[in-house]
Length: 82
Length: 360
Image 1 (cartoon, one colour):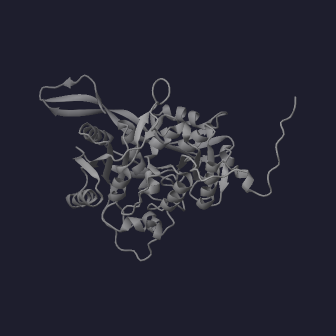
Image 2 (cartoon, chains in turn blue, brown):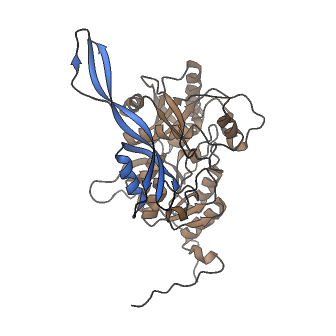
């Protein structure tokens, strides 16, 4: 859910900065980790947002290709009448 | 020698056929259902996801099959959730504000029909406060993906339904249409990828993770012009005006999702716990998803079935140990062997040699 920051009031309308949910598509190439693959992939995705859906779409000797959708946040502006 | 008429306990088995990668079996309109039914009979307890079970106007209900949305199935495989079988769910119906009035009416009539003819408990119903703005994408691999422009509107509506007493949620979102596209023609002809599937999975994953409820999705689309060359695997989606009936039936007895307790283990003996999983069945070239990897990490037997798709992420590429199966019939035989305690290797010839542990 959007979380609200302190609003920036104007005379005729309320303008507030909000955190908007944003879904982001990713294509990552990862160096193949030495241990279990899943925790390493989820850690790599976490730096881009909360992993929503992912899969290894190609696996070579040294690299893995991952396609994913992650949930992030973006600043937005909501305007309403005062 | 032994043998008796005592029923053999079920072997909880996961069936995963990933969505939107063009699996030859299971990549279309519920055409994984016969395999699911067979594996349910072999295992006595099958946990699988909507992509396997949903055939739009076609569906099948079996007490041995547990209908679990994909991200919840992943969390179950990872040991983060248990499943609680229920007699029925109270289904909230979440309708995208972007659905036109006539199409909306069609979906409401499906809900009414499922109440009247199947006895499902449906309601409350709610429209999102803004159009969800679904968009479709293809990844570099060719797999289908997608997003929605207003995830906040989806989650607000889901929260309102949950507060109003819904215990599971069916979502209907308006999907973009391109009836003349080559991709759609290929899919209807039986040689393409389900272009809608990736976005559908994103919607149900987002809502289920946020609410902790069983959720599933049906796309709202205008009917397509009649095709004389329709592949039988895609036919389930062209029998009616909506894809909603199978979702309502599947969710009507979907198990509750029970998070792992902060301390200790689950105490409810009725729960289907993740440590009880005995096998996972997945396409041999699509083993790189969370559920299969988690099961493999935990020592659960992975049965890799020949089921060609876009990907080539197989056991050799990932370094996984698997039981290969040439078909879902063979996979069912392996599940039955595991359930009966028969070593799969004993069913092969030549019999692999005994392995010796080297003395120090």
